[in-house]
Image 1 (cartoon, rainbow, N blue to C red):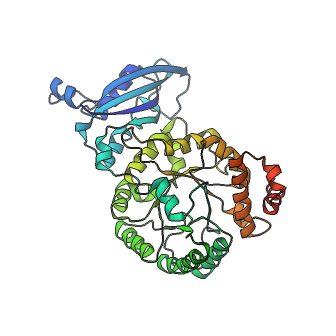
Image 2: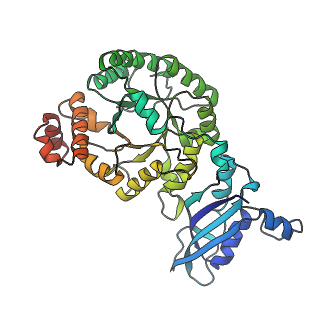
Image 3: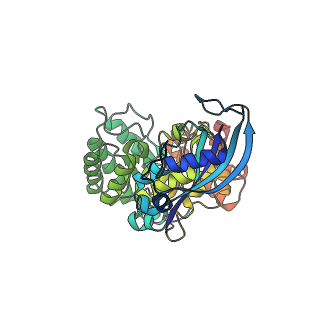
Length: 415
């Protein structure tokens, strides 16, 4: 029988073995009281199993508020692996989410819970096609065969008119940018309507493609309801665009899977809201299992934050996230997507990013790091590109700056 395996960090004031059985029952065939209809045969067929339970440590205080303090005054942390028969839900991502990350978190016996890993049977890869473009398709459409895609975000995030956005894009394509994206806050506001923005930006991009011999990729944020997203995608496609963007936590799994079903362009998946799912180490998700679900749903690019970022995430967490995006979803279905580094990025992070990932299959975006360059936007793009070239060639950044005025000026400014 094919099974789904989920591994958790669990804290409980109860006996850990009992708490594990409570969780298994709650998330499968059981409830808070034994029922005559949950026969041994049904439980054997549909009940979740406790596959592994390893005690990690103890504490005197619970990680999360609890209405029922531990009778022993001690809370135990364990590594717990549960499994479910695929027959309980079939290869359905929304039901999978309800199963492995549903009512577990609020159970009375749980004082901390975090999903660490998720292993799925091949039936999910047969039901969900995953990324349509991934790394190879993105490189083909952008014309960037080697190295990272040097990218940026239109800044300011919101407040620019269509004409002002068009001017910003002109500066970027004149500077040789590979990738441009809308900010997650910019979708279809009355000050900068989606349709008008797409048509204006694509006029500039098509002209740039004629000059460059390749077309910079622009990820237009089409986040909205299903009908809006499909119509917006079709407009981008008709205008010759090569990418669309959606905010995952805003559109949900159904929105993403339906967009993937409709789309003929790469889907740039933004993780806006990730912090409320992950920031507490005692609650929520690790990035590995979370991104695996969204890759199955069809994400071609996935945000992973950036080294020495402006947020709270540590560098080792950022690099671990990026490596999971490039790792296979399962042995029979790699479904490789492209990690997107962002947040307070400049050429200063290029070397460490390259060393940490072990390759340059990524999009590295800088908003202020490009627009804020003292030499202007073109110099910002060039400094980023020169920093990455140095990283890939193993040349120290200070040495590379001696041959690159844009990089030298950037180093003086950003340090």
